[in-house]
Amino acid sequence: KAKKGIMPEYFKKYVDQDQALKDALVELITVQCCPNAYCDHTAPQWAPEFATTLEVQQRVQYYMQGTDKTCLSSKVAFNRAYSIIFNYQYGQLTPDLKPYLAGQGGQTPAEWAQALYAYATDKDRLLVAATTDANKDQVVKSVCHTLSCLTDAYFVGPGSRMASRADEHGEDKATTLAEQYCRMIAGCQKNMCRKFCSTLDAIDMKEVLAMVVVQLWTYQNEVPNAKMSPLLKRAFDELGIQRGGDVGARLGQLLEDLAQDWYNHAPIDPTFFDHIRRMMAGYSNWSQGLKAFFYIVGSICACTIASLGTVYLVKNWTSLPDQFKAFFISSS
Image (cartoon, rainbow, N blue to C red; front, side, top):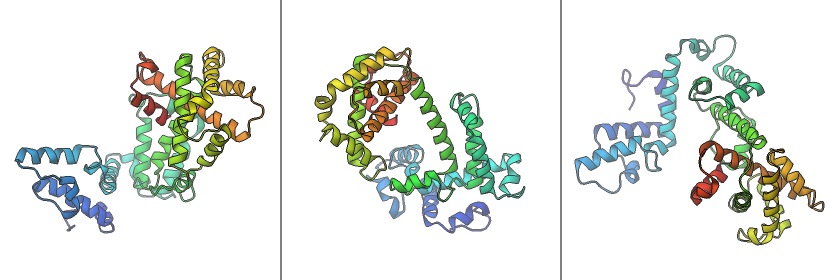
């Protein structure tokens, strides 16, 4: 229970209104002060029982510092508590930020956050952020921290594009301005990947293309309500693909031709648009939806190739384990 002189006032106003935050604080105190006991709602995190003091101590460290789904970090309330405390302390240690946090200058903190977001997501500034080493240049980190401080890290503009997207995908997590900013940078980086993606060997390109198509098939089955799923379903119907295993038999030659063309023309036409456009020239009877489908396939392939070149500078596609290949494609 929060008492005057024990809990800071800036934090108390949040805790008094949120039982989940209270529970998170109880857990923090429990694992630090009495690790051999727990509240009823933490029982799943502590099962099975531990027999020795060392086992309990190791479990406490794992629970507080680990990242698995049974750790404290997986709890929304804990992350909210952490964000509130971090934002307050960051604001206190950044004197130039205090006037904006106080709502001076004729705007509220949320309005100042929107103004900073608009400034930081200018096309040219996004390009600089996307091409700069974040470990050496702290601008991106500073902008994220400032946006988080000004909005308590849980602000999302009503009716915004990201809020609408969350609704379409059935997501209940409000997207913060800091997250939107990072996604804008990621989008800019992906656009560059699509333009300067280069190529793999023709055999590897065919495998990448086939894996992308299969993953799109899986996606439209597992997330049927997603905005893109109807387009994918119509494309697969037009291609005569009824299951993921049909991709090789139905599209084998088409994907092989596209892979070879991609490999042959990459030095002079680096963008995936060029490769897909040339392929479509031989299929004038395709519907607009099917053409859009292959632009999606090409876009994902381009990002996969660029990501592979960034992360594995001395490795090739063939040397990667299957789970890493799937990870690169899913991320792209």
